[in-house]
Image (cartoon, rainbow, N blue to C red; front, side, top):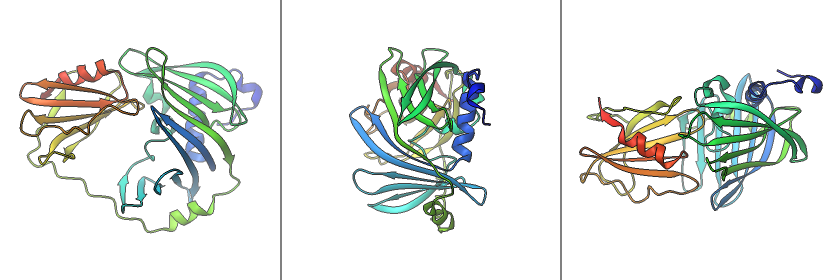
Length: 300
């Protein structure tokens, strides 16, 4: 989709987001951005394009030890200095631009409504603000500024129910590329490690939730061996498309959940005792939401 400037004056908020989704999938671009989470500031570079009609993306962390991620189609490979490269199945590189932004925007409507805001200049480009407002108090709100020429995101804020900023992605330079950069062409030709096999859930207990906020769905169920715990604990990942929650379940006293599960980078945490199980829920939603989700868990 692409509209003349005059036509964009009448575009509803959802149409702006749908154009953003298409731009993130179809366009060749390079963005330099800063990610701010609590006391952490990370400068990043993200490059995207299509090679032989297949999406290819590259993410580079500019500070600290070398840390990169490459996506070819639905395979993401992580490359870090202190461990062998490994690959996983994923439609997007997690942790930068929310994956839901390049997906079907209608999937977000169960939990959010979209409202147009004002306009401002970001990274030297005119931007249109779209507010993504939660339908209830069980999740946070978001604001995204879209480049009025390309529809690519220029800034993304996560704000709590008191309108406090929790996380921000700010583009400092956006380059729309005339052709696919050589680094993406090389990534497409490269032989990357095979996707890691999924762990077996032998003897795993099947937990379910008595309550989830509207729009949240279970994405993954498996067993994790967490740092500090010799025994496997049950792991469940749920999401509404923007907010993601991780739930860990262990028998109380048998497999104590480790101290490493602490609140940081804007995350909330809730620990609940449910029957003979200890439940820890972690996610970027209000702590009250996590506590209610944890209290609702039960065996099928």
